[in-house]
Length: 542
Image (cartoon, rainbow, N blue to C red; front, side):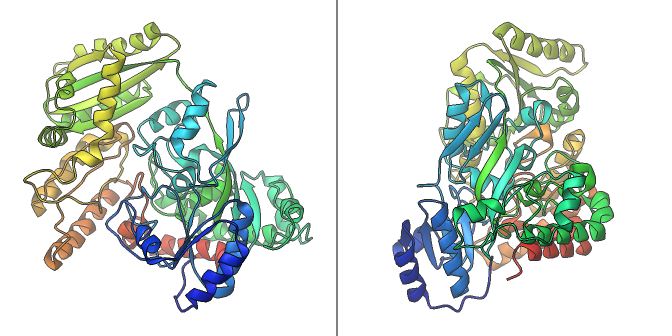
């Protein structure tokens, strides 16, 4: 939804104020406020629209289309790759469109609006014995819509992998209701073969799904099983053609890892994945559609949890043990290194609490769940007994104090903040901070990645979701000078080549955004990047 900017901004603002009930913010201060997210980027938007309801969104899109104004959707602004920054009209859903529409405990489903903050959802689910699997460290601020746009994951997405649909947001979505830039509204999800044939064969208009039509008209043409929508038939026919053209290439080149977040999810259109249009749209970063509503798949929340911390001589040997530990199917499996712990000490973050960690220079945090404390502890003790039989067992500490468990997770959650602006050290930056490989390879990858960092003379922390092969970093790129930027660009080229060699993903959580978009040909090849362009054009030809 990006286009060349040559519009009458004052007329656009006035038209929005006249027709939209929500907040229209075009002042210099508001535009400055929304010019950044949590990334390295700053782009001043055309203006900001805070919709009160779906009608406001539909009207806003119609007006922006008339003026030729691009649109970017925004949640909590926690994205690290510049997805929220654009010279566009920003739609911020978090103030008003933040409802939980329905929680179906028996079906383990939740229908929500895009502005809902993750913690608000989790708080409601907890009393019902349920939880949503993906949980980024920014869970107190990030919104469901942003998580969908980004294809987010999180600390406990390993639980979603072992006990639910999978690690990513796309693996935990049942349906989406989406709005196109041309005003079409569709409800999309998985599509059975026979249903798909009926939809594609249909040329009967069963209700206009255009902006300005009545709510009943939009609903009539937007049901997943409503094959009578001609716009749906057109879209699905084009998606099928795209699958036919690129399907084998997708099978060959898409990484087979838990955390492939880079690129569009064209693999979800394959027959073996049920032509799942909703999941194909997750991770498109506000470039294809606007999400009005999402139906999310939930999992049972363990009644009791136990936390085991393992200490290793270094983070690489910690990584070597990941495949063995994954066989025990924990609900959390994270890694942190001594550089991160050192940064916490210098910044006086949890200074006394760090003593809880067992002796070592690299640590794994392993969480198990159960119906009783005894059951959860037994799972941890079984792993401990297995590890003690090895010639080089790690140091171990089974945390038996709930307050200490909370503190250890706070230590992990503070990784991003702790590694930024460390006293007496160069500034560290995003830009290459969430690459992912197979969990089987993470120990080897960490060594090769450290060798690459040493080649460029970079310092950084190594931590993250090791249980799913993802490594978080903040690196002292030196982005305030031309020479530093050129060095950074050379590094990311080599880092991308390393990831490709491991069959990994440029991003395993934070998305491509402006940081990694230009590296997609390195990972997928030019043919699949062309497929991504064609996929976007199906939804947003303007």
